[in-house]
Length: 250
Image: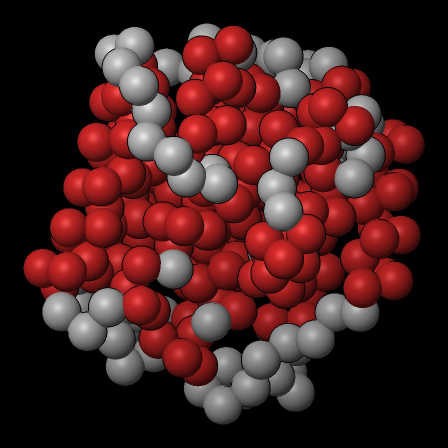
């Protein structure tokens, strides 16, 4: 279980995944919270370092920790790394998924913009998609390609939401409207496939149900992606998630 300060910080940086995780049973919810804390450890690296090399060292620290987990060695003491060992092995999460997630997040150290939309999709699949894949596995189900597509859709939506911040950086070569369209299309592709997941695994992917409302706001004629961000109240989000869980579809 995460410490209260860590959980509170996670709620501020990754609220939508945690809102969806609430619908899992207590043990499943704690596994998801631990996974999302691990992901945040990876995602925050570029914000903490001033030099690429220092960031690469931090990512290597996590690769070494993962190697310890899967090679049966003593796992370094860390609030996230130590308990992570137990759940990854207990639920047979493939090591290459975890390594792929680390590699995907390390791309954030690269100042080069995405060359095209396909490159952005690959990035989203390798980060948000693989994270969702692991989350489904930790709730006892077997994720298929629909889960990766759903994660891709969530990642693309996140890029569109952050367009004002990244328009002169990683997103400078991408067309905003195409980014929104791609997010919507990826979610539709994922939709039917996600219905085959058992209900117990739904909290791992339920937040995908928030995408249509985000895209609606992002494509509203009054929204200027170059200067504005979108707002989406927590109560509305919770109601949307509750409806998705009750229907078992996003």
